[in-house]
Amino acid sequence: MGTPPGAGAPPAPAPPADDGPDLGHHGDAEVGEGLVDLAVNVRHAAPPPWLAEPIAATLGDLARYPDPAPARAAVAARHGRAPDEVLLTAGAAEGFVLIAQALRGVRRPVVVHPQFTEPEAALRAAGHQVERVLLDAADDFRLDPARVPADADLVMIGNPTNPTSVLHPAADLTALARPGRVLVVDEAFADTTTVPGRPGEPESLAGRRDVPGLLVVRSLTKTWGLAGLRIGYLLGAPELLARLAAVQPLWAVSTPALAAAAACASPVAVEAERVIAARLAADREHLVARLAGLPGVRVAGRPASAFVLIHLPGAAAVRAALRERGWAVRRGDTFPGLGPDWLRVAVRDRATTDAFTRVLGEILEA
Image (cartoon, rainbow, N blue to C red; front, side):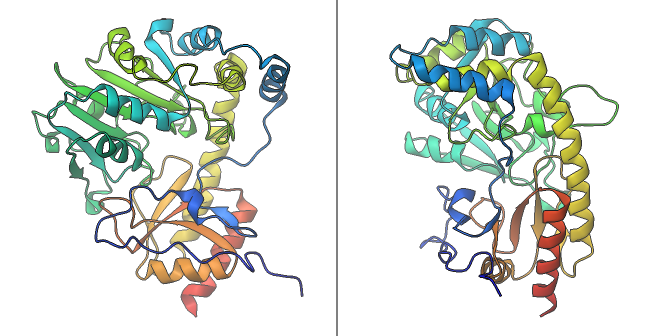
């Protein structure tokens, strides 16, 4: 017999030494040589020619400093905005750092959890005292705007939220906006969402110019498999973006990344995203159905993105057993508001899902 997947892979990362969640832990730390990757929420597909060719074409012109203007204009046009309402960043993660550094004067920053940990990590690194609002698993991690303190002057939330895969209604998000408050909505996975009969990205605020203090964070690395290129952007009022741009390093976004941003903002790209999102929805339904048939596994809420969150007693041991069998999944205990009995699983094609759930079922029945 051949060597099984994952043989010789490094052991699963250990829990943090203290009692708090490890905000610096991300899914890429779960992946090892030979493991099937269900831990990282990046689509595994080669870039199409309309994306790969513009990126490759920049390689002969790297002696010049990057010019963000064409890419900024393209992104602005995609969302029906003016170019000065767009700030290009080296991935969405840089956007959180800029927010934390530029808005040092905020008095009561609040992060709604469970969500991507980098917003809170960036705030803490900049010296902010962060307050958490923890959504309830019993309520499928749905947002109640009334739970956010009225005097919070910075509120950060994901939509759809990583790791819960919950898609909050736009009306609930806009209910959080008010004069004197910056509302940051992380839409890194917005292009993965779809609702039959509704065009575009349901519940996205990317094109909204009527919401006071709104900052939308977007990523181009997930759907198009560009995590190594680092490209994202912020959308908001020009005066707010100017404050963030003032703390951004010069030429922060490379020429190849700018070419990717322009290509991914094209009508061809937007149409392709909708096709991919519809296919993803079908693959996600298949994964949820297979998980629902396993003993002790509960899928949280109604997943809407490229991953699902599951509750499973003894998940830490199950995760280790999966790793021994060649499968990497994302631990949940590093997300505030979750704990050791949660796992996040990326949506993949049906053949991969069938193989994964078969192995998971064998582990649970052992």
